[in-house]
Image (tube, rainbow, N blue to C red; front, side):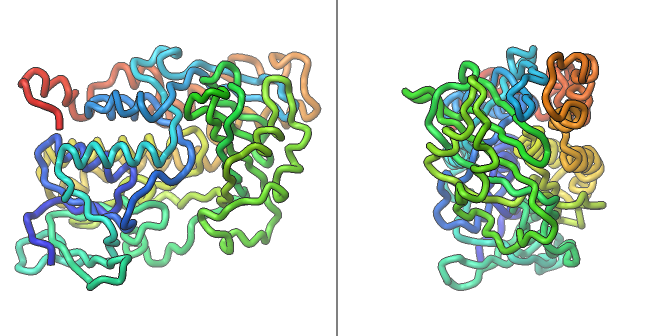
Length: 436
C-alpha cells in the first residue's frame, strides 16, 4: 500500500496528465501520477500546439521548453491534388496571436514536461511501471478513492489512496472503459494513416504546415526541427480504405510499408514539394487507423473524472488533440483550486468543459477546417484556373474562422480572455521565488 496523503491521483503521464500535475503543483494541491510505462521514452510523431495551449504552458513558465523542442509555425496552407493553392493563412504570432503555434515531436514535449515536473515537484511525483486498473471508495468512510495498480514488470499488486482519481490514460483508457463498459473499441471512420519522419529540403521556407488532396487521399507535412539539410519533416499520408477492411487487426504502432500507400502518391510532384521523394527518404514509417471516440454524456462520476484523450479522443484534424487536453488540465486545476478538492469540483469541471470539447470531436469527424479541400475537389475535380471562381475568398475565410470559433482558438478570444489560472511565472517573480 502506498502511503495515503490524500493527493489527487492521476492515471497517465501523457501531455494532459503532466500538464495537470504541473498546474496542481503550482496551486499547492497534492497529486501523484501513475504511468503504465516503466521507462518513458520520446515516442510518437509530430503534433501542433495551438496558441491557446501555448499560452497555458508559457504561464507555467515553460517558454524555454517549447522554444527548445518545437518550431514556431508561420502558416497553414491547403492545396488540391494537383498542387494548386486553395487557401493559406498565417498562424501564431504572424496571424496576430500573442502566443506562437508550435510544431513539435509529441514524445519530446512529453519528456520535457516530465523533466520539468520532476524538477519542481520531486522525482516521486510520477510513479512509472504502474497501471491503474480499478478503484473503489477509500476504506474508513472518509471519502476519496482507493486504486488498484498493476505492475508491468510482474511485481506484486499494489494500491494507493487519494482524494480523487483523474483518468488521463489515453484513447484506450482503463478508467473510461470501467465507466462505460459497453462502449467497446474506438470509432474508425474508414481512413488509414501512414506517418513518417524525413530529413529534407525546407517546404515553403521551413515554417509551413501543408495539406494536399482531399478526405479520401491526403498528404500532410510540416517541419518539427531545423537540420543542416533543411528540415526534419513530419508527414502523414491518409487513404480511405474499402468497407470491411480489418483495421482492428492492425497494431496501434505498427511499422508501415511504402508499398501499401506510396503508389497512390507517385505523381504528387509540384515543384514546391516532392511527395514521393519525402516518402522514399523516410527514416521510419508507422501505420495507424484514424480513430476517435463518440462524445460522452458525462465524464465525472463522484470522485472520478476524465481528461485529454480519455475524455475526448478526436481525429488528428485541425491540430487540436493535445491542445484541448492542455486546456482540460488547466480548467480542472482552476476549479479544484476554487471549489476545493472534491467530487463537486469534478462535476463543475464536467459542466464547464465537456460539451465544448464534444463539439470539436464531431467537427473533426466531419473533416473540420480540412473540409475546404473536399469542397474544392467536388467543385473542381480536374483543378482550376482561378480559385476565386471555385470557392470565393469570403467562403474560405468563413470556414476557417468558424472552426476556430468552435474550437476556442479565435484570435480575439485567445488574446482577450482572462488567464485560466493566472500567469504563475509573473506571480513568482513578484514574490521573489525561485522556479524549480
